[in-house]
Image (cartoon, rainbow, N blue to C red):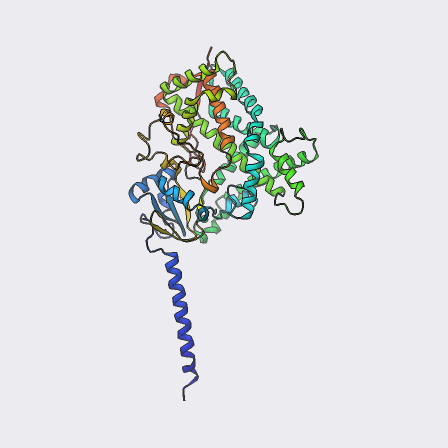
Length: 497
């Protein structure tokens, strides 16, 4: 007669077989049959050691050896890196939906109220509602046009400050950063705040933290080091400072008088509070959402805006013949006017080409904001697994010699001969991203950049301090999410008569 053990053998074997089958199928799903090429990696850290201080440049070099789509490992995190227009098109257009999620990053999550903003929010219903709020209510063409007076006043104030300092050396980086911050302050918050310098310092820390990538973000068992590396303390301090400031702004808007009932002159906080009141009970626009969206607007509307201007002026100073051609166009269009206004910009195609060329060479956020794949798929014929993080090297694509003739040269003329634009339809030129997760504030930023650039070259001739040669101007880059000049742009600005 069979023992009890014999009766257990069949179910036990069946259970073991099913477990093996499950693990085998899961392994096949997580380890694609034809993954993208990968550089060799080290134990534990993976490929993190290959990023260096300027990841966009390091990844460009790796892509030249391993191809336009690579699979890297940052610690335990698989990361697909796209470095070609064709790979970007597949990710941001052909398969945009499944590449539209954001990875859960702890630092942005804590700075942005659990990712209640638009840039870092996970893909889903909340994100769709908030993006719709931004596109329809905050960043529509009509709304951007309503801030024309703000742009014209603030750019004129900047020009006046520079003129007062002439012939002394001017920190143009500081001037452009203040301009961008003041424009966003007035558009988003309704006015410039007295503690501007304190606000600016806190904002610089905020941007640095958004781009921080501590080891414990990629190697979970190193999370205990957070107590000693100072990052947590900085996050707490910066988040607390901004929360206190934004709380006071919201209180001020709730009790203050409305400036214009028809909405024409309302700032972003007014508009968001209106939406909150109109949808009481069922609205996702709570106070934390308002604060998170305002922080988004500062990061996108201030930091990247002045970065584009800073690099445009850098390249113009390094290329005197291009500067002269631009000054000729702007001064001709301005005629006898003392001050350029936005109406004149339509007569300046070369100015628009200069700005495009600066953005091609110096994408403000060179690796864009990372995405996360929500199901298994193929890209360029390679298998990429669900959960893979995705980085798109917009900086490398803008310098791809297969797409651009003499890609390292600053030649605005190339944009006079093509319809290629940066609004997400041409994947060889994506400084603001594309698809669902493309930047919704492009028009806001470009309106400031074009006017500021026109006024600067209209009003001044530029040189370098101590008679330094233009061609020797340092173009070293800083590190971080947004790539600024490593050193401030110091110039001598001589008023043109």
